[in-house]
Image (tube, rainbow, N blue to C red; front, top):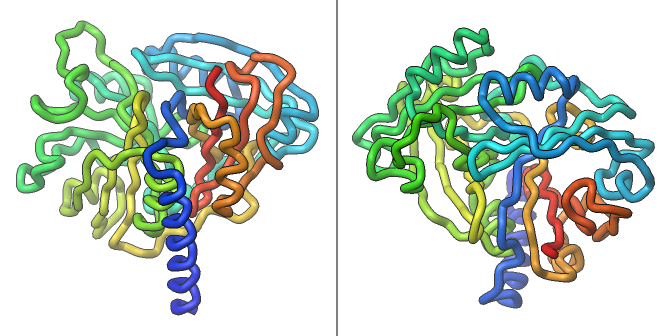
Length: 338
């Protein structure tokens, strides 16, 4: 069985390498536009993100119809979508009024391959943590953790994992001077500043790089290996040892790959995961390739949509797009730039 998985992964990497050579010099994706998640109670979620984390409402729409069913892969859907902004970055919350999906599993773990979070940058993590405690958020981490100085890539970073009302994992993070985007070091009286990246768990970094770097054209910006008691207490995974690879498009938040070198008992993405399940995330990427769906289809990427779907209006902020899964099942929503 192990031999079969390795040969399958090798075949996938070879296929991606061929595609990468064909598309050398041009990136399929130019921008990471926003990070989306499915919620069970929109009004509750909006209150949480605006009142606790100080996001600002941008739009609030309701959509239904065959085109949206094809886009999301959910028959008979009616969904309410709210876009919220924090600084320069945005998230999108989707509540499926019909059909309702499954809740986040109570036993979800940080090393499961369904894991995804957004990293919210703060100007003062101690004050931000006190604010979260005042609002009685559910902890994932034992408390804010300072990553040790022996790790040159991550030393001095302070971070804390917690959950939103539906159980989606979130992170607050403070960079020390000299680390992270310089914009996070600008003097400000704001506490919550913006989104630096979304992090996803991968079973194999090299396979994921074949998708994100070689197919989509994102660039690797940093790599590190994190372990130790601070990392264990941040992720709430005993014995955690992670290979972390940060990628970025030309603009927008980064996408961070988290491979648990130990422990290796994280569960795979459920094979029947759908967009109306509350555990669902989808990251919106903007492409200038008029046939991005065709390009990914030729590379045998797993499309959720039947192809690029033309929408009847711009309620969602775009008129043509599709969903595709990465090698672990995480969903990317690729839309055409206009």
